[in-house]
Length: 113
Image 1 (tube, rainbow, N blue to C red):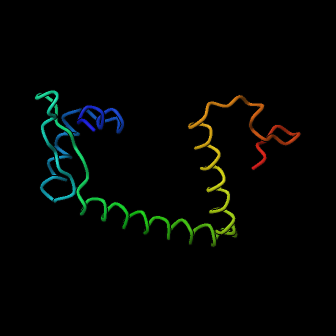
Image 2 (tube, rainbow, N blue to C red):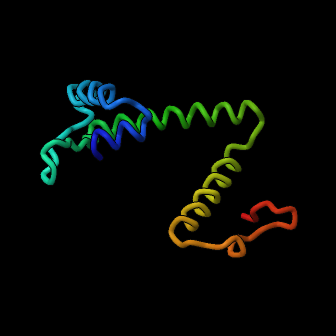
Image 3 (cartoon, helix red, strand yellow):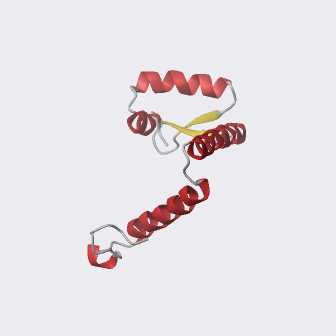
């Protein structure tokens, strides 16, 4: 992804994105290269160490979420199953354009997963 695309996706200025990428690059989490098709652009991608750190932080957040749901009395297994069904439904809608008649609906208008 280009620095501009990354800045747009994050809602940051290009200068702020450049500073953040420099810090991440120095830490070994990101690498940037000159775009071969356009010398004025830089392409950024995560390094192996960056991906490992990202996934490790996600695991900690998942544990925090699970603990909170359990404390609030919500069965975590139901949350995971519901999330998977929703992700599958959304993926199927983005892969194949579907009309609303193709989506299983309950009489009250909610989606029947």
